[in-house]
Image 1 (tube, one colour):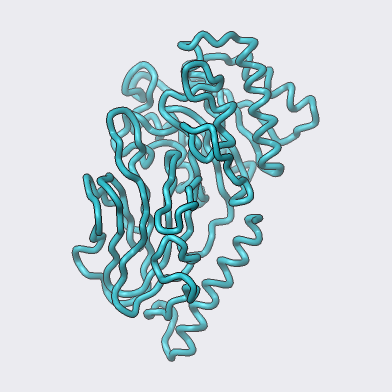
Image 2 (image 1 turned 90 degrees about the horizontal axis):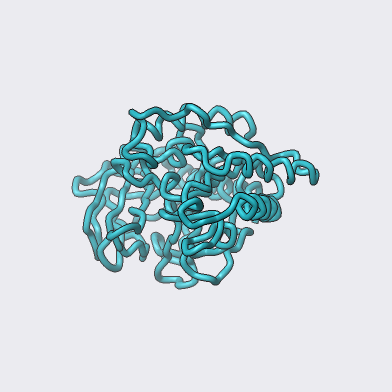
Length: 347
């Protein structure tokens, strides 16, 4: 489904909500009649008003699971309370009505996101889960929302653009204060008012050499499983930012092998996202720089005019790093300040 078609559906859903309010004698901003399909109860995982951004496994109609970092769900709802139904223990973040992301740590079952009741009317909700990494093994399984009796959901207007970030623990936001929420993919997406996904995992490489190789796993629903393939018809990215190569050195990947694999990944991304602008970042540690540039030149020479190499030399200083590899919160803000205008110019 194209993003244009999805935007049309989103606009029609919002229009239907507004008309329902007006026909009921209300005004925009008042409690709206639910716009949910009669076939699915409001707040259930299959509720068409809930938008799932990123790669979510929706094969189980009672439980949706995101496998990659930075996935989130968003929805409008009516009433004065909202609860999140989880399976097992998880750390998560939730924002209501555009407010700050509030952390809910070690929760399970029915999680009350509104310990203080909201005013009656229309509200918005965004939920994202902590990334499974290291010793953390939270159960990121969304089983639905519990709303007030008689309350419903409505679809929020869709953002115009979607940016996909491909990478390793740096892209995930490892060592930052709030994981992916304080990493440059989330920060850039929010700054540009775009949806954002992170096809990234800690320890990932470009080449599969005793590590998760994104040359292969980029097309997968789950980074740690050979199948199934991701359905790229679910969404189309307008920009793809690749930051890979930091970990390949430690796995003995040669320059020639890296260049060939990077070229192949660029071709794969182009095949799946025909209209996206692809940004190939110089790794912040300066690894495989000539090979990355050569891969970009190769696909450009094949006629791809929407791919570019991004020179990141000097972007990060010692005060921007938690250790020798990972940017801290300040470092991710520094990256955002540098990279966001480059992406914005191509959207």
